Length: 163
Image (cartoon, rainbow, N blue to C red; front, side):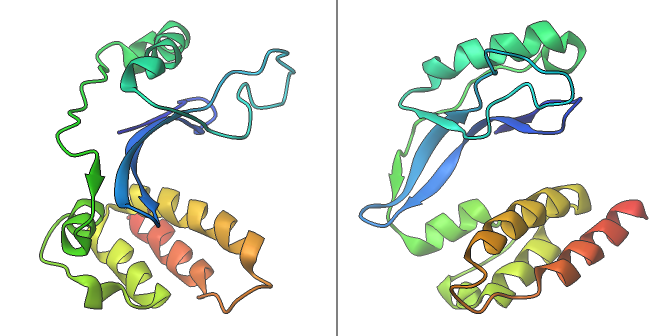
């Protein structure tokens, strides 16, 4: 589950999974706290997502969104089942990340394969969000390794979204 602020389009709440290199894919709960000093023209949220240990700790962040944007968040509830906190089977983890058909580790050996999966398995709006986030991450490591041409995938996703 992800919740975006409808005015700024910033990710504010994230309940999902993340890779833990020691254990596998694990459940993660994050939110972006509001700034203490709101400044006109600046984001109302701090830049870094804060990770918490239980979903109950996200309720205050969701209540803040409901107060600011009641039309968008009045029916949102944090009912996420913790049926499996850590997933260590790579095939199962891939099925969770890339819904919509069979997938196995051979399908994600290269960055280009992952980008193709994003292009084929997600709606254009979600592709743009995913690829923008990936582009930001790639820019921070661009000098350290060979990176795929994510701009071409991003432009393609934007064109699909417009049609």
